[in-house]
Image (tube, rainbow, N blue to C red):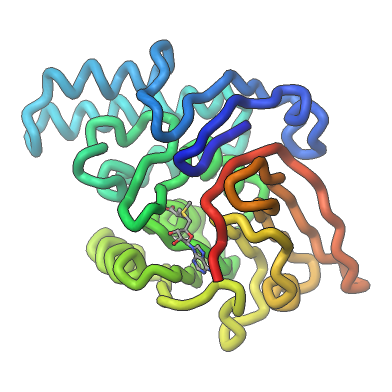
Length: 270
Ligand SMILES: C[S@@+](CC[C@H](N)C(=O)[O-])C[C@H]1O[C@@H](n2cnc3c(N)ncnc32)[C@H](O)[C@@H]1O
C-alpha cells in the first residue's frame, strides 16, 4: 500500500497489477511515511549521503538537491511512471522548498513527510501517479482539494494547468499561497475553505484531484467536473486502507469508476 499519511504500509503488488491504469507498475515496498527512509532507495541514498557533504545554502547544497531530484525521477521511472511530462515537472519543482525545514535533507526521499497541523506533503510516487492518471493538457483548469504544502499544485502548474486549490487549514493555505507566489506559480489560486463544497464559481473543471480521503466521493466535486473530465481521489475510511479511484465523466453524464491501488491518505475532514 502506498502511504500518504503517517500511518504507512506496504505495497500490495497484486492489487496494483490488477489495476486498469497501473498494470505493469513496478511497486517495491515503500517505507511508512513516519519511518526512517528505506536503505537502498537511490533518492534517499543520494539525499542522505550528500547532506553530509553540503554547506547549507551553498553551491554544494544546490547541487545535492539537483542530484537527489534526478535520482528521485529515476526511481519514479523504475516504479512505472511513464509520462515524460510528469517526470520533467518533478525534475523542475524544488521539493526542498515545500517540506518542513527539519526534513529538508530528505526532500527527495520517496515518502510523505509532516508539514505541521497533523498534515503531510504527499509521497512523490503518489504525486506523480495522480498527475499521470489525470492526463492533463496545457490549459486545463484543475480543482485540487487539499493544498497542503502546495507541491502537487506546483507540479500541475508545471504541466501547464491553471490550478484552483482549496485547503481547510488556514495557516497551510496562507503558507502555500505565499510560497507559490514567491516561486512564480501565478497560475495557482489557493482558497482557504472546505473542499467538500468545491469551487462552484470556477466550475466546471477539466480535472479534479483530491489529496485527502473522504469516506465517499463528494457529490459536489462530481457535479463540478466537466463532461469528458477526470477525477482522481482516494476513498475510504479514516485510518484504514483506502482505494485510489479514477473517475471519468462521459458525454451522457455517466461516471465510470476504476480502482487504481490501495493507499493511506490523511482524512478529508468536515
Ligand atoms: C496529504 S495532504 C495534501 C498534500 C498536498 N497536496 C501537497 O502537495 O502538499 C492533505 C491536505 O488536505 C487538507 N484537507 C483535509 N480535509 C480537507 C477539506 N475538507 N477541504 C480542504 N482541504 C482539506 C489537509 O488539511 C491537508 O493539508
